Length: 180
Image (cartoon, rainbow, N blue to C red):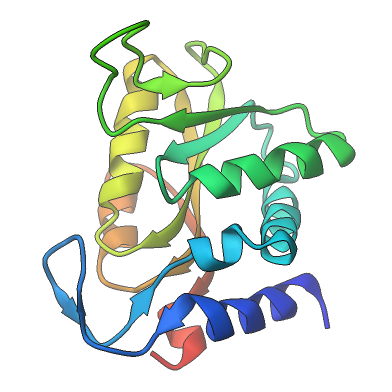
């Protein structure tokens, strides 16, 4: 089996709960996806980072990051794998709002510079809200968002919302890949 197939099995076995839940968007769903159950697992983190590195090839990307909390373990896993593969990337995390003390930053990590090409990552896209917040934060400092990468697209309008903002979305899997 290849990395994608192994990751799909891990996600299906560990990240999906098939029960009724209320999502952060307020919608009710017959399943819940918690990507952290795989992105915080050593094997899962490694596979996710390998696949993202594959997805970044030929993209001429300067930095990768996303909104805390879904992006945190993905970004952390990406660092060593990107380094091993010779990808010179800065990594960053976007806070939901700027700190009210200290440096008062919203974006943590090496400073992003205007004109840098960035990719936004997240574990799941539903309405796209988390990715949209991250896109807005990096655009505010003049970065170009090359694309957004998600582990799973729930196919509930998020990709369309992002594409309307001029953000190309590339998901590893969709809910349909898991029979949902």
